[in-house]
Image (cartoon, helix red, strand yellow):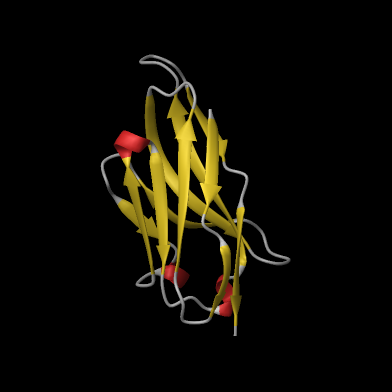
Length: 120
């Protein structure tokens, strides 16, 4: 299973970006899909998570500004980021819990990371 993230870049404060992450490979079912970020000199932190049923959760720092969504038919998760702040600058990683068969074990996979830079 591979996760391919895209959509990062350089944006001015107050601007918007949309990240995408597509899962491919031997996939029977995907449970939670999530976005994490790692800022300069910081540990990786959860930004947002979406369950297969559409339940979402957000870090307090992004509530009201970021929206996570997923297209289950495309095995893809998105992160719409609005009102970006310089402190949102980080490498953003997608994450998914995947089962390869009906009775197979769940495994966690990570995308390669995409850099988001917000200038002041």
